[in-house]
Image: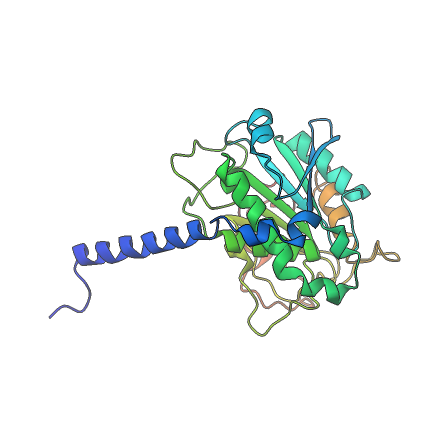
Length: 313
C-alpha cells in the first residue's frame, strides 16, 4: 500500500501543475481590446527619460510604440518604472532625483507613470479607480515583455498609492519561474521570465487598502523591499522580503515637517539619500512591536536599505 505517489506519478503531477501555472501567467498578458480602448488607456501616460535625464517621449498603452522601442532599446536591456503617489506628478523633485540616481547606478531606460488625471481627485475617489489603473500598468509590463524586455530586467519603484499599484501589477503579471537573478549582472535569459528582480515600495498607502487578510507583497517580485515611515498613511503589516522601519518604529520621523514633507512624504527622499549615505539595519528596539517573524539581527553584517544593497538578506 502506497502512502505517497510514486516518483513517476509525482513528476507527472508536478509537470502538470507547472504547465497550468505557466498558462495562467501567459493568459494575464493576452491582448485586451476593451482595455486598449478605455478612458484609462488614453488618460494614463508613460514618460521616457534619456541617459541625461531629459524627457524624450510620452506614450500610452494605446500607442503602437513597439517600432520606436525596438529601435531605441536593446533586447533584455534594463528598465525601471517610477510610480508616484496621490496628488503627485512625474515633475516632482524626488522623481527627478530618482531618475538621475537610476541612470547613474543602474542604466537602461527609465519611465515614469503619469496618472495625474485621476490622482488629482480626492483620495478615496482615487482608490475606486485602483483596479483599472493597476490593469493599465500590468498591460504596460506585458507590452514590454512582448518586445523583448522581460520582467527579469525590470525594476519598479512605487510611493504610497503608487506602491500599491506596483505590487498589484507585479502579482497580476504572475509569480516568476527563475529563482536567482543578479541585478548587477543579469544572466542571459534562455526562456521567458515573468519575474521582476527588484521592487521598491516606499511607505505603501494603507487607508482604503487595509484588510483582515493582507496581500503577500513578496509575491510581486524576486525581491520586494518596503520602507515604512508613517503609521497614519502607510500600511500596518509587513509582508515584503525586507521591511525597513525608519525612525520611530516606522511610525513617525523626527525630521518630519509639514506635508508634503511629513513622515509619509519623506520616504522617497530617504530612498534617494541612500544612494549616497548608508542606512544600516540594527536590532529591533524593544519598544517597537512587530507582526513579522523576521528580525534585523538576521541580516548580514553591514546590511543597508536601498538600491545599492544587492544581498537579499
